[in-house]
Image (cartoon, rainbow, N blue to C red; front, side, top):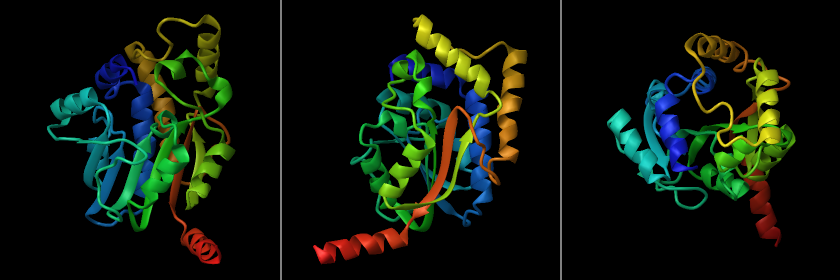
Length: 256
């Protein structure tokens, strides 16, 4: 991302309706997983640290971030050091060491998304899971995505295909931000036509509007852990290592 995007993230992620809503949904989903006591959690692409306090409710958190500026801001905000690293081949952690790995709107920034997912699989403990969010619908592509250096937006089928090809079994795959989908879709399409210097959605809306939007988005935390939403601006997936896939790959290697 652009350096200004990290500064904007740091300034808004504790109050902006989108960050708060996504965090509320992720918290509810993780709580529904029944994490083991003292769980080891890895957040890849941890940005400026807005999710750390939420994740620390569930265990000991290790955070990795590629941006020097984001790590500096995160250190100032959280009082802790983040590890430098990037996907797919430079995440400085031991294999098979995490009960939960989280990527919140990270994979769309990575050119080698399937290779990244496969690399992450080797970091999971047996029975460990991944919780991931990505932007949905390539037809919503706009200057918002360009400014954030996205490589792609995902369809449900594309994300499923990438996850399964990397050797996982999917526990949950759902859209999120369904309530505000019409508003977000119109804003993205307007950005595409107008091509503004600063895309919509970056600044925090006025207080009352932000509060309403935050409440509407956050309300999905009561639905998403138990049911899939049929549409939305983003996708959320929960998945784990597929032992059957490993067996098939081993068999293929023997046959070769």
